[in-house]
Length: 295
Image (cartoon, rainbow, N blue to C red; front, side, top):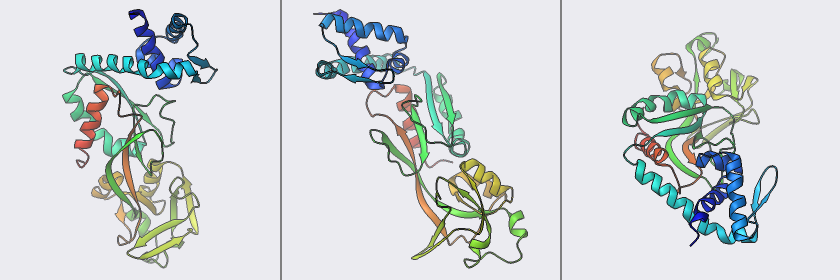
């Protein structure tokens, strides 16, 4: 029995799982040269080539593909051992990405209560309005309000919401007449590029649909900037209620034509796999799902 092959096999599985040597090293807590040395050691002991290397990626040889299931079982066993040993004391970082508005309005209020339960779990929060590659950026968990189309990722819904029309009272006070569905397109709008790529506003009321391109509009690619501009009195905006309800309570925003609404959206927790999830991440996901309706 070649016990000396167990560690290199786990490293081999980690390289395939993460896609390159650097990410495998970060997963296992070892350096990139150490990963390379373990792969070389395994290939030499088996007298076969397991991985074809390029500057940007790795791919399996036929021998590597045959060995992979066994190597994955070794890696899985090591992860399970870590979970057993740390079950009563979960610790370590969780790297989370979301837009700034979701971070502020939904996630941030939940972090303190979670930290009180698990003080040794820390967070690396990546706030961006761009849709970043989760694997390339080593993201453990993404929170996204959109139609999820990523393959090979687990998507767990946490809340449903709907776009609605909002404005500040200051903006409404500048208008010469009340807003109606007939003059809606002649108001100034702030348009979120990701949701309205053709600069077209679409709102619905029952079986009726109103679709138009505003005569005057600003374009933004940031949901948080959209909220800020609407609050500042720049014009109308289709906003997500979950993200602006505190602004409504504070009187900084008011609904406009509340019987009309935009598209329905779902907020998802997105992570790469149901398998090999570190205990700290599993606890956080469960906590967010349990507290999904708590504001």
